[in-house]
Image 1 (cartoon, rainbow, N blue to C red):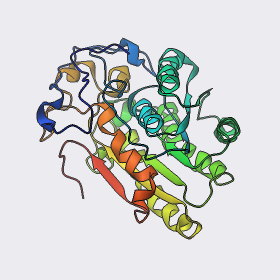
Image 2 (spheres, rainbow, N blue to C red; image 1 turned 180 degrees about the vertical axis):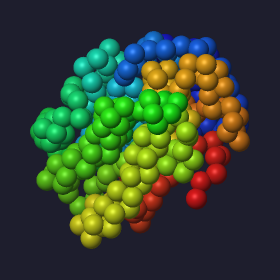
Image 3 (cartoon, rainbow, N blue to C red; image 1 turned 90 degrees about the vertical axis):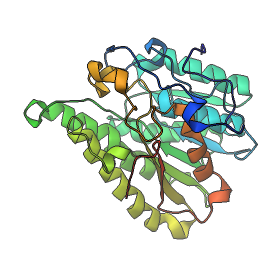
Image 4 (spheres, rainbow, N blue to C red; image 1 turned 45 degrees about the horizontal axis):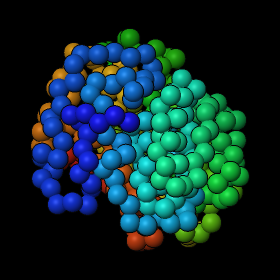
Length: 305
């Protein structure tokens, strides 16, 4: 993936000022049809191809990352591979171009990479994709429920039933289904990591449906973590703040709001996808063995409960 002013070759282990690690980007007003492509974003996002250095923390592990073709999911998949894991990713067929790029990076890292196209709003796919991932990876011990739908709508009157249903199907109902399917495969020591959002705590009036699904994910994470704790399967979540991903220019934000995206955070800038990856690596690794039902906030300093 080409480097530009929004990427860095400074790895995440090097001492650096977080304020200036990345520039405070001012993306020009732009719009893509859903689900959006990383390759068409301006500027490009950093998913860690040049900046994430692994230390062997997930050697021998087998991971499935939903929505792994771009943004946070791509960054997590790359970080997992750099840490020694074999990785399967799900993505929509429209995202094939981005998925191929992520698979290229995973393969060049020297890990087994499995690409599984399909729609997580399809009940059967949620079950089948987990089975296929376990079969092709030779097992499964990490599930990252990351795929999401985010579309800004200015009023409840304009929020259609179709969008509400698709947002809930993608963001929370798919998590129930993939997690349930994964239990057949996950041995003690496995982890499930769910992507929630700062929107669960500070809901935008433009993202009423999206924010409510993220609050549901928080509750789902805590309840499931208690249910599975005595089985040795840990469930946790990561709550990103404003992160520059294809969700934003593909109706996740109004185009006119993009130049100021992330500027209101205490750190003064939007986050890059690779800045989320270490949180997922920590929650997937055995070093977090006593962390259960937790939410790690990666949001540039935005206050949360």
